[in-house]
Image (cartoon, rainbow, N blue to C red; front, top):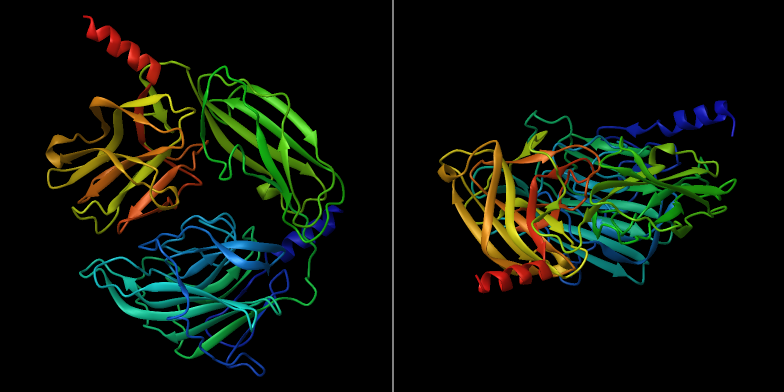
Length: 533
């Protein structure tokens, strides 16, 4: 591909269509256009009532997303065939694995934001939590019309004052398999209040999987009742997309892994082409392991050629030879090159390997190695009901570990505040925090600011190899330290209104939470020794 052609293509990809609330528009750089009820030949409002027949989506609260749900069949969205989707509480659905999208909301499109590849039906600061909140989301597959409906029903806006919400919004997204169009209908809407603190408080549009292409058709506007908008898939896409990229380093989420130092570890990843055209040549995948961080010394460097990749083809790759981990933090970086790639921005993914000493005592299991935070976390509206906070998921290399201590870096706290730390099993719905293993509550006056809170357990607690959580609960306005340095673990969760979801800053930061743990056989030796002293 010539450099001039590439420059033109990238310029084309940067073009987007935006509007307030007026007639048809587009195309975007891929070819999507949109129509409204006001346009000649536009869609006619025809609300599909699934309030009694639809399947209830569970797990929605404030600023979160429910677990991924399957579509009845793959749906063509831009150049990808989507098999599952994510429902966000703030009026959006993710057409690929998506982090939380919360206020202040990004412009549509925005590459590299909280999420890419989503449909924003009415992306605003909505809420499902709170006593008496009638909000729900239901889904339904219309086999006769061959369309899939996602309805947001009676969803209010968030507010700080009691009861925590106001207004009511009912709207729906229709994925039409007959023509790959996307229709958004608005039955009953409460005008949003523009508080001026965010550039984008409410919006509607679609964004491509890499976030570089999209149609933002409403911004800072509440749709009128009885209106409908349709995004039309192009008869012939305006561009051919070749986009090889890595994903699923070591696990599906490219999340940090604890391993035993000295035990050979197979490094693996998925290499895929998410484009709508075959690569023009073979694709090379490269795995590197670096010590401590991305600027560290090279410990491993191997490449393999995986040949050409068809449209939407994915290939699992195991790098050879195996890597023998050191103790402490290491960085795994997998990158791709070649194939006629037009989107180099997603050619590299970084994950984290943390080596533990087999049989070691009092080792730190967490994802930060510093006592200097780069920021702090706190939620508005936190009460004393254990319904706001944050957590990390820890998956030890084996089941032979016991937890001895809990640690949280508290950036700020005053005497009127409070907090708690809890160790929880991952036996909740979809692997969420479940059974309580240990709980410790603290008055603000008993906790220092700008330092680690260290809680030692009176009796060590055995944990499972499939994972456990350390949860920090917020009462009042204490703040928890965060660190924004690569590598990141992607093992952080936020707790809002009693519901856990992946932390919205997982792509850039880690929470300053960790535990002290020992190998179970070491613990047994200590118990045996102490019994005879």
